[in-house]
Length: 400
Image (cartoon, rainbow, N blue to C red; front, side, top):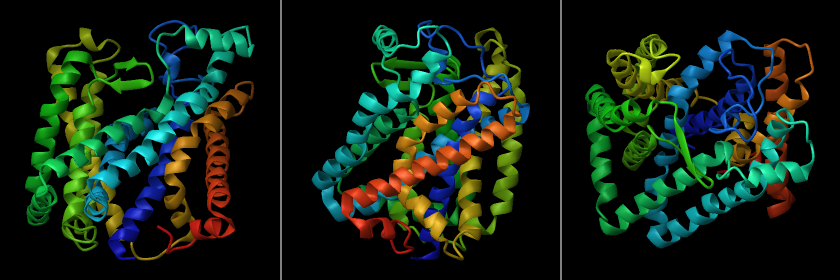
């Protein structure tokens, strides 16, 4: 495996750990809302299934930064490998593969994983602990809470969109490769254009709906201000990936890797600017001044893009030198872990409600156990699905 491909694989491994950390932290945020009734709209418990009395403000700062750039980064990472898959498989096979690999797990989440994940949220908000009472209230909500698996249906949509564009315009990958080549010699201009387009697709929706509002139709939930943002970052990943996973901005000696420290400094500065301005919009976004809302809406795209470039640059600079069996296995199992992790996270947070342990210790316990459980289940599934040798390949540095 080339160094850049190894760096991206290691980034994928670390990102799944960050995702588990983020969800494990939500019960212990100082800003977590007080629990309300399970059947009370707008069903805030979807974002905070468990709210512990032990909190730590430091987690709010960490999770705020992760919320700014993590999901856009995941769409960008997903887009990096689309060009290669489309060119190898063709449109029809690619679409069939995406429907099976993304659509089928989304159905599993709807039917099994989401109801199982949110049962503790019901338990801490009602005196009726019966499964029948839970199911009755669940069906009366008018929506179908899906948890973090909302990512799957949106990821499927952008994959199908990419396939449709490729079928209608076979020169798509050639043109995006040319754009990736241009970005390699003009990284700052490419970054500025990315931020500008991001502001165009994000800021009007954020001003209209606020950055925090979600809407759902059945299991299809959507953060109203971010769909354009996620589409943009997915196709940014497709653009960079079509130029080559070891070339241009993705080269281990490219402009992102060489100036990783500058991108990191820019990401930190942009985040604190966004956080400072956004703080002026609390507690009521609509009651805040137009200047504060506009500033928060414009600095979010800057902080998001800078954070993504900083992560890419840092891993391309440092994470492509040596292999790690642990990181290789995490990378191979990252998708299954994303699908499975929320069940143990929420149940462990619920189990620790009565403990007097500090918030940081509770977080560490939840993260460690949820990571172990979801990782082990993923490897075990691989073993059952493909035989004993598959689990060994999951830990092999050549397995991809």
